[in-house]
Length: 461
Image (tube, rainbow, N blue to C red):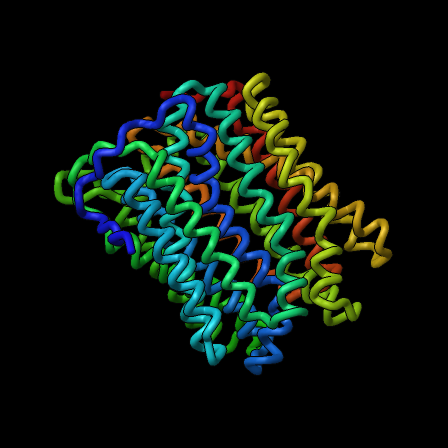
């Protein structure tokens, strides 16, 4: 078996990707995030079966979902810093190995507690994949228009996980049980390992500066405290000791995190999220919009998955079919979006996308009829594929060249924080109220993008 790469070692001497290998490399890079999304969507559909088999409560099922997204969100910033320091190739290969092994262990979990723990570890492994792959894309595609097209293709490939995940999760859960959904990750990870090893360029090591363990720990504590308070607020009440304790942890850890990140960079210390990045308006707006995007999208997926099966009596397979109008556009429309962003800039497509997401979420809030619900989910799916690729392109373009890993980590950390909050907040509300809240968040994101995102496709380099 090939040796698992260790992060502190120098980058291996792989020649830079030749132009003729860029398409294959892009496929290999996309498989990492494809797997991260696949793991989210297949598990969402399998949640009722997991709860029945492992005697899990609603809170337990929320932690099966949120344990993954919290670890993913909390570690993305550190993963971005690791990609900048040790090279995207080495970080990506490490994450792929870990994800394959942990997915196999998740399939064998014997209790709800063990599964939640493995989901946390899977989220940590997944965090290594996303900023590393985007850093390599930014390094290989230096021209802004070419990068926009590459990001569109990257989003289209990863978006097929949203299309395939619910349906595959439903088929596998009904036919073989929920454990089979985790085994899907193993062949995908192996394919990503082969293609990345063969085609990804080596990265020169970045500045050998200290990492930021204090910032990492306080960020993780803040996110965990906030999510715990939100999840426990429904069964325990807002003024219960557990909820108040979670809120106190969030406030204290959040304040310590901001204090740590204000310290100047030095040879011995490098903040994982330099606050100087927020002087760039496009980057700041992108982080806010990214959080709101995943707050709405992940919350809607969680709420409707439970609603379809527990309130409407759908099977897991029927639930997967019901989500196809949402997920299919994410598999092909980003190609169009990438070309559009390359020609017109990021702001117009992003605003249109968030408006479609908000409008699509409103439809199932007012009807349970299959045809209008399907139309609303299709509008939501097209909105996702119009909004997110230009958002990623704008944020990467606004970041300094030596901070692309950190910027991609920050954007996706904000998105995954939004996903965890969406599941926690919207999962505690009645279905119509949850959908209206999600729509309001998405329309707010449209306003943020419209007023703050720069027009040009290219950012400061």
